[in-house]
Length: 251
Image (cartoon, rainbow, N blue to C red; front, top):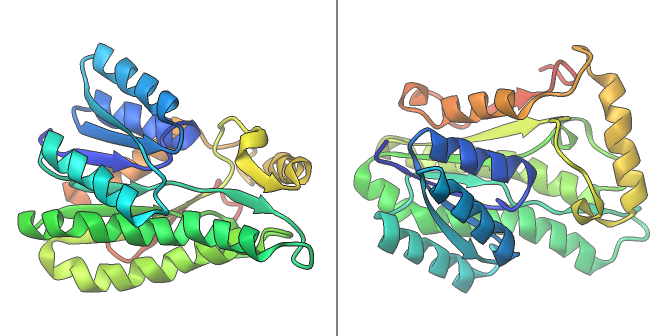
């Protein structure tokens, strides 16, 4: 497969799994996170299995670091064909207790990063007349979530951002879509939240009981959806929000 995938927030869970599966399917992968050691180890694992990977430590809320990330991808692999904006932070705080800095952190990691990364990869995609952009939202953007106003605002904003990008890039063979998961079976720990970590983890556990199919989704099921949305066969899908939540939210 002569294509390169950039996955942000690739050090753990969904991002890590997506990078490994794309590499196993023959894609070149560029993986980044704020913690360099984790993505370096992942790149070594991918290459040991016969894949091609470039690991980059980058804070995708910073324009100069995003520019360096995409420049490195261009130099190593000839550009990014598929962008998966997966970086996230879970700021859990009651609205009347949330600081402006915590609000800005959620918005920056979710929205600023998507803007910066999308803008950086578009020139190469336009040149090739082909590209796939996937923005990771979540069920909280659909139903709201208590004490996570910054995250909900950011993930809701991604949907509007995606629709605008989709309209402006469709004529160039580029699609831009949202994937909105809920309760995918991954690890949760203190690194997943800023603020009321315990309440965030309790809400995650409680959410499992609200899934009509009676179980959490698997990473394999999640990858199958992402893989389709970024395929040639999905060329007619753009500006859409794909939900994967076992029936917890229907629209």
